[in-house]
Length: 129
Image 1 (cartoon, helix red, strand yellow):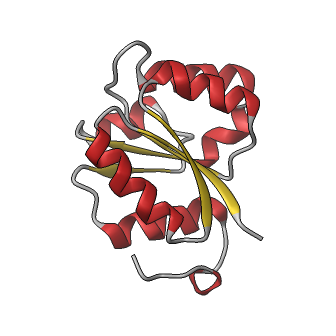
Image 2 (spheres, helix red, strand yellow):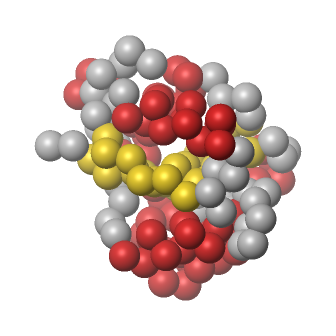
């Protein structure tokens, strides 16, 4: 059974790269270019994993995390923050997120983070990223 993922990233090239990497792990992928679109999608769909940039136009990733905390706190454990910001700060500010990765993303680290969030054995997924 395919999992469902959301990639939230304002940079189109990075969003496409992340989409391809997540899709290679047998996930159907929705995409959002800003926090406003992300909140709309999160409110309408169930996601097994969410990749979230923090610095975005309209509504920031931090505001998306605040919304998720208020509306669906269990989802926080399946969010992977992908950011150019300091990972130590991200972990301090958002301790319940599943993982945080620096940009540029190393594909195998992303795959490992997806597996961690989904709490499945890596061999249950394709690992051709």
